[in-house]
Image 1 (tube, rainbow, N blue to C red):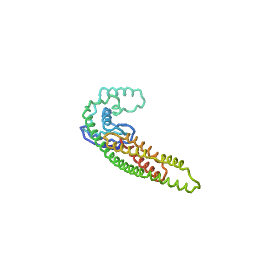
Image 2: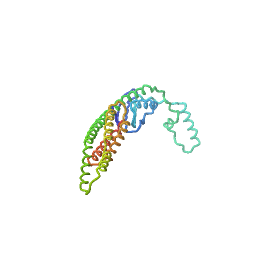
Image 3: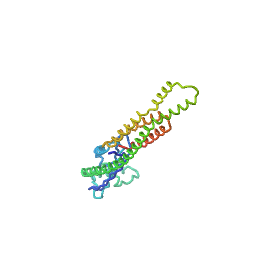
Image 4: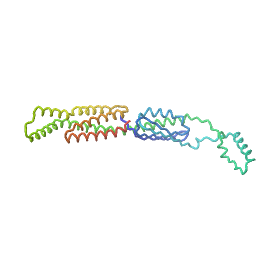
Length: 288
């Protein structure tokens, strides 16, 4: 199934610590580039988050943001190293004895001293598991969003393929008619010229012009590219790069068709082809 590279997913869940909220969004990118924003308590999960995103997403610039809103009950009470705090206060009082107009020492300043507030030992395993479980849920929503948009792009590409196929069929019918019209014009001009034309030289020139106007090879290649594109659209894997390459091939054949054109109708079809191919290429840039 085709997947777009632009999508958004959000998931919020409750745990013993409070509320976990994931937001995942992505835009077009040549490769997979994952950027993370994690709360301090969950920075150890960075490698595992990147691994899980990489298992579900192949291309795109993906931004993953996790927010943790702790409840009052989950916030641990401050533990103070009283021995260190007393030492800090004592040292400050000693300094005050030979300082002029020393500012009074506030309790907040003592608490800011490194080591005065003791970080309590906390078991982060349940919080990490809850965050990873929420990540799986948001990735499910995120990938589903990519697939829905990818399905819309697929329908658009299929409709453009049908139009291109119709143009190719019309051009096949038009090629012999275009040559006959050119031949009639040439003979009419020769008839206006006094004197007899060299029939051998005339036939030779007609053969040369017919070869220059022959676009059967280009039409056959366009038809083959259409078949390949329809096949690729049904693959259950990332196909954005492959389709992008096909668009280059489509462009090459349409350019050759335009360069061989000897009448306005063929020129217009070549222009129509290029417009359709450009529309397809712009949408393919969004595919994974």
